[in-house]
Image 1 (cartoon, rainbow, N blue to C red):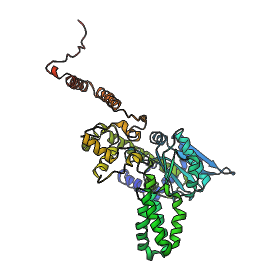
Image 2: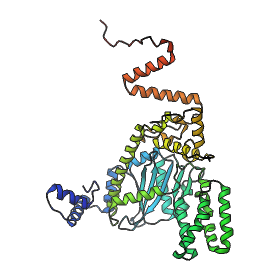
Image 3: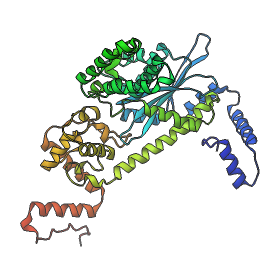
Image 4: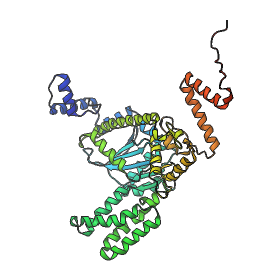
Length: 462
């Protein structure tokens, strides 16, 4: 049970209920500790962690100081690497704390799937959050990617990452975005401090909402600059420190967080690092205690990732077999069970919410049809084909990802769809083949609808 990640209190309950022997919680901790020490033998915690990682096929990178003492450790599960190769487009990086007895930051590198599930690309335990350390960590990620580069990396405003990402993943191939939630939260907190503390919290919130938040969410650069200029004009007189803070801390990086700029980046809807924050929380649920040695952290993280992979695979299977009633009619009929059901939902939701005009950013940010294209296709009765969407949404088998095909010829799209249907019919068996053959024959030759199609004889000659 310990290896499966079952908590000591749950172990106690199970043994007391099913084993017929009473154990208290202290005994369970002692038993687990003794079992771990027996498994370690003469190895220390680091050696035992590395032994476990190598045994499970992990990709491992490590750094040691001049005294041969470990300073940084990076490890990636073999399934994570497969998923990264299938979905390399968006990477989110963030650190969490209070996970180990050394007090070292635990870094999670998260990827995105087309079924609203995250996956851990890799984890690292690092001694210091410096530019050199993060540059080493990013090169470890680059080693996993091979010749591929991510479209976007999302982080908070960590100085080490801010300095090292352009070195390892430079523009224009990879765009670095700052988490918009963190940006807004930092601005609100700083405004509160500069205005006089908690007593001025409501005033700070109002100023942030009126100027900064509206600027951040403005769809045009003109609208963004208008709100920033308005803020500077009013608050240069009232509190110049607030203006200096925004100018010095956030405006130099405005293209990395303001919507008017990020709406031109293929980020799949990831403009904040909330996925990583969610992963931190889930990991700590498995971790139970933040005082474990490195081998304990690795073992708990391994259990967490195995659970996570199972969730992703189950969701991919559901997406392949989900028959969305909303997509029965054009333009999404041919997309069912070929692309992620989440992709279809996002497009149809966007069309349903369309009011006066369409900003047409969805195709750029998500690789999907935007609302006005959906509405127009409905009016024309036209169907969309899977190849018209980004390959990310068609990758529902991470072990055999499809190639990206940008086919603009409508005739070729129809031919490709027909070839796919032919394969699907053959996979369903003889009865499906017979029904499809009859439907095709009578569709092409309506005058022959009274003629029987002879079945081939499979008997032996007499």
